[in-house]
Length: 377
Image 1 (cartoon, rainbow, N blue to C red):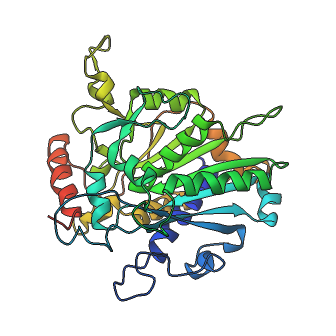
Image 2: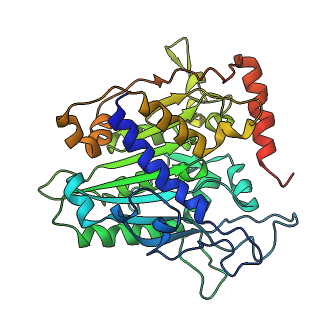
């Protein structure tokens, strides 16, 4: 793999990891379910490399719309909006190096009980993002859509939906920097990658990235350990709109196989010719896949851990071939150039300490391990 692309992937992965480091899960804290730090100090406090490269402009909150009579899920605190990520723009110094103003949105993965329940709402439902053309054939997972579109309507001073917060802030930044070259980069882990894909589709469907007389602003998603989000029509529409998705997955990670363990892109067509009747109801992955293969029997949770993903990418990068000076100058744009072409799966060599399981055992492990993530059952 091109080491410059690896550098780009790990950079956005580290920006996502900030969401976990800063999320306050202490029930006794005044910042419970919020970020521990202010926007001006977030990147520095979480010790990210070169925190001066981006300036955080807005925190993003999502409200789980879960109505279920299970304690301790149904209480006012668990139904409140909670911090899921942030919007940032590259600094002026970073723009000189990048050659563009990069607007970044990052999302953490599932942490709280209501978010776990939202993950299990696996029915497909129309996204209906465009007000004049709802495209009822474009369907996405209802739980992810709920997190993206629900707001605190019952509260007098409640927040807008995650969607409204994001579209408003991105529109503001695009207007602020409208005379510059720009890119929109969305990155997330697990559930967060689903929100990133929904936002990318939303931006492109509404045409927010289109500019009259100029090329469209590229919309790119870096998905770490992400599940499937929508059906075949969702995938096709994302491709038509030019949304680029790079999925970084682990073959032993059960979350990347959900939803649609049985009815997915692999079971949509019979014999490569006959489209099966339930094809429109099948979940399908979007974008190009970069596949890792790791498993540690002494630390099973590593198969879905974001930091493990990042560490492996960094380890691989240290062993990659050197590149010439021309490639160095274009290092920050290499991911966007890579995603403009159709790629095939790329495989990392397995680490010697990692174990390989057969497909049958892996499937059983996927079911049991995914259920063990959910601490409410």
